[in-house]
Length: 238
Image 1: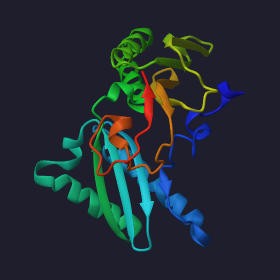
Image 2: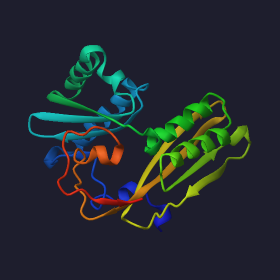
Image 3: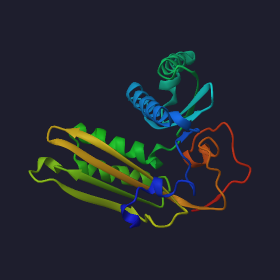
Image 4: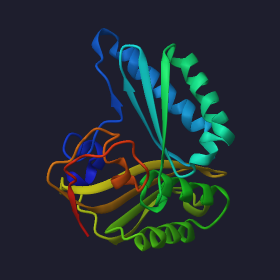
């Protein structure tokens, strides 16, 4: 039932790494709840910064928070003032030293979460959902994606009965584990209720061994600047 599975969870440990990286021990639940609190806080605090992923790594005395965003200037601020404020706020949440990394997403059209968020914002601004979705699909395919699928569910156009519609271009091989598929679910809040927007983006196929650490090869996957890179880079078929 590959079509029913979250494509990200289905590829963890194969071509996709985890977004929380630490050893739990007896306080596993506390750390997991704290990670969720950090992510919710960052997304709420930086709602206008087009934040896609928040990757958290922990050692005994240090919490490393890596934010991938399409608008790093908003997070960093003038002279780094905003990023210093955010670091201090995260210190209060974790009660530990915090290292904050910011990575720029050069091509947000290939990021499923940013595409879904863009469609949701347009729908909330009363733009036709069909127009918003078709524009998103065209923009993604212009960036050489191999395929994109968007599903929207809810009371479309204020209809009394909820329904789902699918829009697809290219290929989305959900059962191929080497297929680099990004996936996201975002909700749009309208006067008629909530609409669920799901986005799948097929970027290519990964051959060879991929480094699963979230910070290694990030620029190759996201089109941004990374602090380090793997010596053996996997090939991706175009």
